[in-house]
Amino acid sequence: MPEPLVTAAATRTLVIDLEGGLLRSELLMEALFSSPGRMLARFGAGGRPGMVALTDILARAEIDYAHLPYDSDVLNQALAARARGAKIYLVAGRFARHAAGIAAHLGFDGVVAPADLAAGENLPFDRGAIERIENRSRNANLKTSLRTWAKALRVYQYAKNTLVFVPVITAHQLNFASFGSALLAFLAFSACASGAYLMNDLLDLAADRQHPTKRHRALAAGDLPISSALSAIPALWLFAVVAGLCISPLFLGVLGAYLVTTIAYSLALKRKMLVDIVTLAGLYTLRIVAGAVGVGVVLSEWLLIFSLFVFTSLALIKRFSELSMRESAGLADPSNRDYRVTDLQIIAAMAAASAMNAVTVFSLYVSSTAVTPLYSRPWLLWLLNPLLLYWFGRALMMAHRREMPDDPILYAFRDGPSRIAVAAMICIMLAAI
Image (cartoon, rainbow, N blue to C red; front, side, top):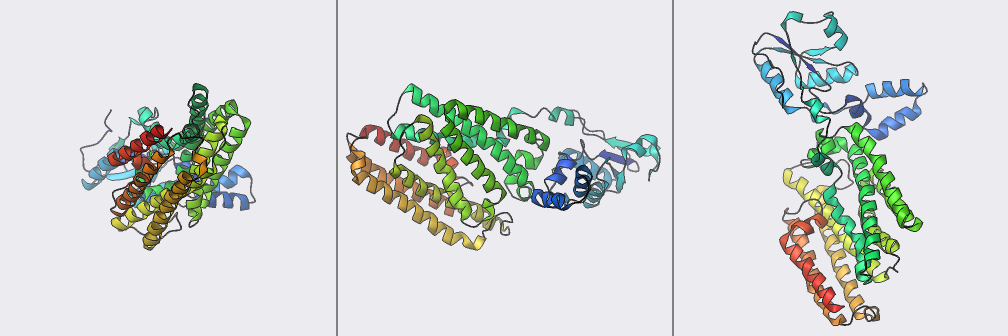
């Protein structure tokens, strides 16, 4: 990787390209997504022509200069040169107000325009004393790595979409055609969810950059250009639509409901207390509904009710983990959620209650006549109760000890005891058939 140019002379002047050098992002996009809702409101209220109004609004956007994704190598070299007595200027061709704000925040000496620098006119320093710090490796960064894309698309979250296989398994439709349809449904949901994750990250840029862990997300850290994410979102959703049509129009309708709900969640519902919990539980359950529709099996009302309680509990555990992390780090209440750190106890109680309700529903199911046509040894299913109690109890305990990451479903895939418990549940269900 080529090293940026740096001067050894303490009295020389350094100029740094703001975009493509110091900033690991695009200033236009940063202005646009600094507060998307406010930008749209201002644009709609403006009486001037569209592009003129938009340019003016973006120029006056409120950007958090302290949390922008700066290139650490370039910034460190500039600050080291400044410590040796050099003067530092930013080169910016647009959004002069934002460039000046960034220069002031970083303690630089000012901003110059590219045209003035090229012509050598109107410069506040001796042109012969200039050294230019350039991040010449930025061109290589345009070819975003597959690892960065996988991180941005949340490929690891695809584990949640395996829920579309649940109806196939519980209905005992274990054949190639059913698994083929379920696999295509899995791919459709994965593409749809990745597009939604990108959109959510764009809308949450400012909040994510102030979060101790979310600031490492690809868009928040500047690893993935905002413009690339904007191009990827419609491509992913187009693939999801095509895959959905290959299954059935009804499945596409369920997928559309999932996407609309996800967008509503990203835009507004996640900021509503408890509405976000119900929405998350519904989105998880909707995956199971989509699996049943895709394969063409009748969805059991027992499975539907059980799933709703399970996912409500998991959504509450997710919120508990997020708030407990903030409490441990001494952070303030989240700005993009309608929860307070003082809500931890009631959230934990609700999570435990939902988990116990799920176990109760499952016990009633095993006691009902609905299991007789599906299982030759239904009495074995009673062995699932202690395993369910163990897993829910462990999840709650790990969250209480601050040893669980944000998402309990992903935790179940990574945690050794949880994997053993899930494997034992599967073996019991197979033995009961």
